[in-house]
Image (cartoon, rainbow over all chains, first blue to last red; front, side, top):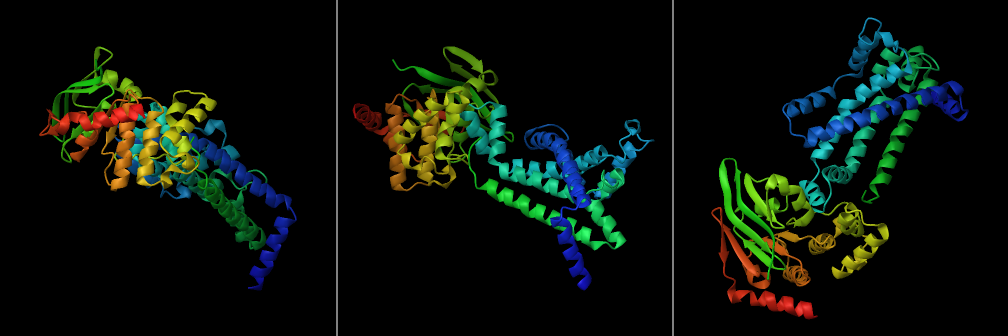
Length: 232
Length: 237
């Protein structure tokens, strides 16, 4: 019990003293995951739109596939991306393995199924009358689509937050394709895993506290955003 | 001479292999209130949505501006000319102001002009005190008036109302009918679908009845005089 207490005090010290190593790890985590979301969102939302409103053969199979991919463990995604980027893999010549770019790609791949499945569910829950009302009031189809997206914006934002929450806290992909290199590819989850295996709990608790604070912050912003009702 | 704003010719629609209707001719006469009656499930809503360019028919010819078009050629023009109001009008998750301004903004009207026109439309609908309120929080009758103001502001060639007084109390019904009469007296062409036959006498100038997939013109008790005189009163008011 006293070990946990002293580790927590140590964690607090590390956070408030601005420990360079700790804050570099936090910076890498955010930088990699935000870049992954910048790739995943512009790919994921159009796919979700297509699955929600498009009518083409194989649509149901695709929806089922993305729903199933949500359950794929991060290490399996990590292994797949590893095989793709390893020297013998199809993209081996790019020499991306054990770089932040590899982590960004891996996390984007990990985020996509969750983002697509949740955004698809959000768009499917939209009221058909919203679409028809926009069209009958003179909106073009793309404009009506934006209006419908605006109507379900909280659910769409929730899907983005959920996807970000999944990748910022994942270990499998980061460890396998990033390599856990200090000051380069070591992020919060891989650092927690490493420090815990070494029996150094202070840094692990400090980084865990950052993740917890992040979760609270994201939900706070979501609630704040829900209070606004301005039409785009 | 009363002009025809829009005409649907030879309109056929089927669902699941069952023919819903086969309508020879449906003409919407300028500045007239047409009442379309029929039992639930007879196809009134479907027919209105086809006229609004929102639902693709099995077959239909659309006529306006002296020209005939297939529905596929005409549906974009229909969406620009016709406004369809749902039985329970959809309110965008935004203020009453933004809801009423929606069509104007899509038409590229300048912001000061939008503000002026919306203010006027809200006064017309008696909703000025609700300008900043979220439209989703309004009562059923108020939503109906927002929808009417939202349609009126873009001056459609034809306004289609689907069961506009459904599930309303007597006061809400009277108020909605009052606004419909006002729109007709202001020169709008209105058609409403209803299963409430008494609306024919109250606002109708033309009565069509959809039954067994066919459209039949029916006489209006009193020859539509009640609606005519009320429209005259509103015009002179």
